Each structure stands twice: as structure tokens, then as C-alpha cells.
Image 1 (cartoon, rainbow, N blue to C red):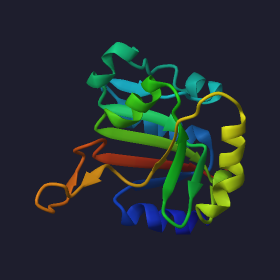
Image 2 (tube, rainbow, N blue to C red):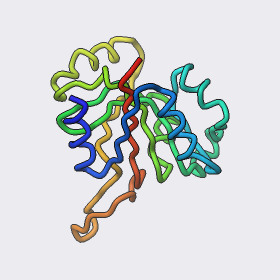
Image 3 (cartoon, rainbow, N blue to C red):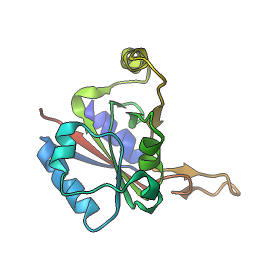
Length: 167
């Protein structure tokens, strides 16, 4: 399923990297963010601790971010899409404003199709309160202007999907 996900994600312009554990992904993120302003959506405590040398921008400065980092709740192999829970406006800004968006995705959360994601979506929505769920497929793209495909007008120009196969 990881291979199917990778092929689909790369077909829509994403960069996909596979790692045996979170350490490899953290090294990649540290290289990607070196000397660049960073925005981060909600990260697990473990990932946040491993990225302690990165200081994300405060919410009032998110427009200055060059790289956004987030963690996916799931992936869809058929489309190469990732599901993110971005209820707080700052979380959405961290994934939409930077030119580069890096998403950490656990291989164990990849499902074959969108319909197979139904149970996971139901669980997220049942947790109570309002939820903002987003499916992201590739870098931002539009063909609004004279049907010319343009990358990065309404969001990141680059999408890096970091698949963690172990743990």
C-alpha cells in the first residue's frame, strides 16, 4: 500500500520520502528547515520533543514562515492524499501559508481508498466539539487564470510527505 500511495502522491507533484523510523524523518526536517522560519500545526509530543531545536513562529507571524510542519492522521493510497485535523486557525495557517509543507505520515495509517477512511473520520468527528478536517493532495495548484496550471498560488509550492514505516 505504501508503494501505491507513493506513486499516486508523486504523480500529483509531492515529494515522498520513506523512513524506517521517526529519527530519519526528523533529520530530513532539520535539513529542510535549516535557517528558515517555520510554522507548525499540532505535533505529537514525541515529534515536538525531537524537533526541539526548531522554534516555530508565533501565530501572529505565521505569514513569515517558509516551511510548515504537520502530522497526518491518515493517508489514502489511491490518491496519495493525507488527512489532517486542523481545527485551530493557526494550524490551518501553518499548512497553507508557507511555500513548503512537510507532513509526517505513519505508514500504518494509510488506507487503500477514501471510503476505507470512513471509520477513522467517524472517530475524529465523534471526539466532540467542532472539527476542521482537511484532505491534501499534492502541492497547491490552480488553473483559474486562462486554464494555465500554476503551482503554489493558494498554498504551498512543495509538499514533502515523510512516511514512517517502523514504530
